[in-house]
Structure formats: structure tokens, C-alpha cells
Length: 335
Ligand SMILES: NC(=O)c1ccc[n+]([C@@H]2O[C@H](COP(=O)([O-])OP(=O)(O)OC[C@H]3O[C@@H](n4cnc5c(N)ncnc54)[C@H](OP(=O)(O)O)[C@@H]3O)[C@@H](O)[C@H]2O)c1
Image (tube, rainbow, N blue to C red):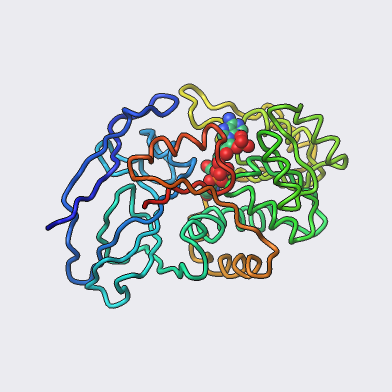
């Protein structure tokens, strides 16, 4: 009896915040693997802020998800049948397989992972795309040096928790900016950040001046908007501002709010540079090996927010990112 593949497809281009009827939930017959292919079931789905951008019909670093297409997503899948020499039944594989319960793949762009060594969520978090983003964003784009003072926004999220801990490992002073006392407490008590700023309760600009009186050598920005402006007003000479993301702007239906304090770059002889982690794909192995080493030495803690559910829970789970309801990497784990 053929199995049913349940898919979450894009039904409408969202305007502003996502709504349930931007999605359709569709059942199709699960495909059989052809020669050189394997079939697999989805075990865990990655939720990423970038997904919001992929839904807009405008030029970006990847084409938009087409109306009617299965939503693009990184997932971990478990092989259920294989005609591929490199994949056996029971293997776990990470790849961009989309928001659906069943997949068939020839292995292109996929990577076999050992879930005995780390749970699926870690391969979507610290050992996956967000971990690579933190690593290359901080060390390569941010040109991090020992003794730097570093501030990170979105600090309690998937990228932020890894970036802050890497900066600590590299001997830096780290200030995390996050929403709410619980997240701020976790960053200091659990992850070893030196200081935090609760942007919902504090004046970020004044707090940065207090926590980094000599200015920021590196500002790693995940949120954009007013917080980026506050950081630009507190730069040290030759500072590096890393534009990793701008989640505060992703639901904007009008113009994105740009930084008004950009002349601080001139005054401080600083630079601001954006990057896309995919450009570092050839070096992922190097980063993953180093991060895995730090995890096994107990120097880097993985933070994952695993939501158990079904594929139908994808739309509601994605919303959690924009409400700040996740701590660490947000993952939907399928029963
Ligand atoms: N450049 C790249 O290649 C690349 C790759 C991966 C990710 N990114 C970017 O990195 C950033 C973090 O991604 P992630 O996967 O680690 O997500 P995440 O930080 O785990 O989750 C998003 C967090 O953003 C915060 N947030 C939501 N709305 C906000 C607002 N209006 N103002 C300030 N903060 C807000 C929330 O935390 P609070 O409770 O603290 O508000 C929320 O938990 C995103 O901007 C993403 O697009 C870039």
C-alpha cells in the first residue's frame, strides 16, 4: 500500500505577518526510489527567519518559493528504502528536503549524519547552517581578535548562542542583546556571556555605552532596525559590523528601516559587511569539526528548542521565531 506524503505548500504570498491561509496542507502519494535514489521519512524540520524572505517575490540570494511549491526547509530524514550505494535503511541524512513527511533523493546536496553522536536538532543548529553562520560571520567577516569587545543581537537564538560562545572561546568580552530577563539570565548563567541587554526593557544605546565603555570592536547583527543604530553609535575605532540578518524588518510590508547612524563608520574608520553563509560551503567541514570539538570538550553548549508535533504544525511553529518564543535553535520534530 503506497504511503501518503503530507506536504506544506505555499498558497499565497504573505503580506506582513504570516497567516494560516498562506499555506495549504496537501496529501500526495509517497514516491518510490528509482535507481540511484533513496526514500526517507522526515524526522526534524528546521525553522529559520530567512524563510520569511523566501516567500516574497523579489530578487534575493535564492529564488523565491513559487506559489504551490512545497515550502523550502532544511530537514533531517531517516532512510526507509534505498537503491543508492551510499545510503542504507536507517541512515539519517540532512539536506534541503522541504516541509513534507516523505522524500526521495539521489543524495545531491545531502549529508549523512551520525545521530548517535548528536541529536537531529544539533545537525540543524550548532553543527548545521546556524553554527556555520556564527563561525564564519564572526571569525571571517568579523575578523575577530582575542581581547575584542563584541556585541551580538538575537543573542539567545540559534546563531546568537553559538556566536557568543565562540567569541568567549576566542578570549573576547561578549555582550548579548536579547528579549526578556529569562533569555538574558540564561546567556550569562549558562553560556558565560559577560553582560546582557534586555532590549525590551532597556535603552540599548545607553546600556551598550555602560557595558562597552571603550566601544564595540565587533557588532554581530541579527535583528537590524533600532538596535543596529544603537550599536553604530557605540563603535570602537576600526570596528567591524557584521550584517548577518535583520529579523525586525522581515515582516515589513513597506520600506526596510535603514541605519541612520551610518556616519559612525566614517568617524570610527569602521566597516559594515553582509554575508551569506552558503558562500562558505566548501569550508563547512572545517567549521563543523572545530565546533564539534568545542562541544565534546564542554566549551560550547548546544541550545535547541524542540517542538514535538506533526508536519501540520509547521506554520504555527515558524511564527514562534517572530514572537521571540524560541530559545536557541527552533526545530519541529516529527513523531
Ligand atoms: N547571513 C546568513 O547567511 C544567515 C544564515 C542564518 C541566519 N541568518 C540570520 O540570523 C538571524 C538569526 O537567525 P536564527 O536562525 O538564529 O534565529 P533565532 O535567533 O533563533 O530566532 C529569531 C529571534 O529573533 C528575535 N526577534 C524576533 N523579532 C525581533 C524583533 N522585532 N526585534 C529584535 N529581535 C527579534 C527573537 O529573540 P528575542 O526574544 O531576543 O527577541 C527570536 O527568538 C536572522 O536574522 C537570520 O535571518 C543569516
